[in-house]
Length: 153
Image 1: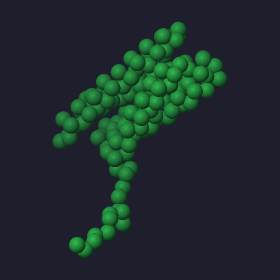
Image 2: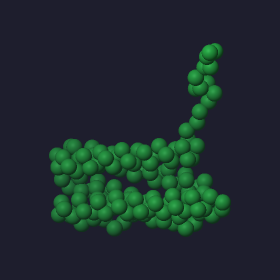
Image 3: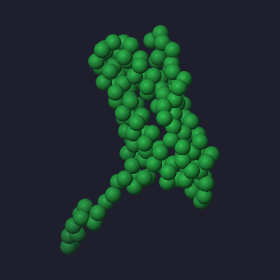
Image 4: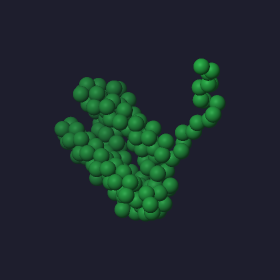
């Protein structure tokens, strides 16, 4: 694989972060109801974090003598909190897949080790986001069978 492929994949990661900036921002202003205060802040923080990631990625792309994309990936709009959380999970899963692919391409193309380590840190962070969103959307479930057996004592 070529250096060009690494840049293309970094631009894909950037496109997902740009989508995150917009999607989280819209959700932060659109969320209504009794949970508004909590989730408006939650989505606002998500937009800021996506912005921080986008800044880091654009700095790497430009340091490698390339022009960063300005086109976001797919943005999932929603009007209810439940839909917003589902849309957020979908965004985070897609972004994680793009980060993981960037790591694979970086290894295959001999990208600088610092970039590879940086990608690994962000993959771990994105995985944490996916895990948290799975809990918020109730994709994680438990049963009484999983509880430890009570012992007499």
